[in-house]
Image 1 (cartoon, rainbow, N blue to C red):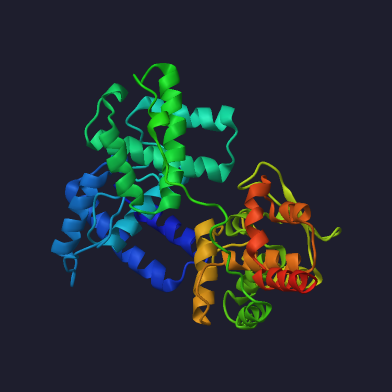
Image 2 (cartoon, rainbow, N blue to C red):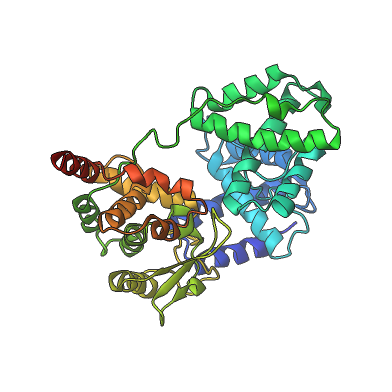
Length: 413
């Protein structure tokens, strides 16, 4: 099987998508070795090139490639079976996925599987998640969080092993919660909430002989026990001034921080923002529903409009098939994930000595609005809270002002 035309087309694809020469060069060496491996094995097709052949190919690389050395591989958990020679595996997986996407291969031996969806050992688990999406009307982030813990519970029971839901005992539930949450009260509550819904669903279908949902007693956590720690105005200004917009990625980072500081939006909302959500004529940006079920329209200030325009005109990759506003800095320039936005904000904050996450900008936004005398109902709308209880925590955010009110009241007595 001659892979030369495929490799040439693949190299053209990498070059047209802006991959650097230092990335293309090693991949070309790996694929050249792959051609020799295919010839040595007398393979007629790559349709069945799975993990076993990938392992044999790496052994072939070590044995015949000049200056090739064995690799210890990853020191962390990976969803891929092979852990050695990670760069070669990555080159191989990317090449086979490209061949599948272009129609050269009918099947993909290394499909990209989301870290949460799929792979359930109990069919009722998948049925419950479809029930949550279609009938309970959970928001996207809420569904993702429920799916995460439900899928882990499904894997845990399979490893015990359990073959039927009626074999479930309280010891299984306690062990799973301890493994996933330890003494983190908030996480325990999240896991219990996800499992309660699953247990009620299974009990209604008759898969469980008792209602285990009633046995899950979460430790109590007082909602207003902790005070949010917002950034001061000086800290926010220092943070924005520390971003060099002339450096690579500076225009994007400045727009992200200014959007978070001036609108109080979450990292997930920034990541989900698309070009069509920006109404330049009306100076309004409409964030798609992430934690709630409704769109969140907010006004665009002139500094934010200028920052976004500067990024879109001078730094955002163009042309791009993606409609997300904020893209990555490396090929193939895909959209930023919510986790990437959070990591980006946290990294820049730590660089100037501010501890915490970018969510502190959201607290700072709410704090300044409260100081200006805004009503809590208006603050609830601006923050996109579907329930007022989520906004109540900000009643404790301006302790100095509350203390001054108490002092004045005491003087009047």
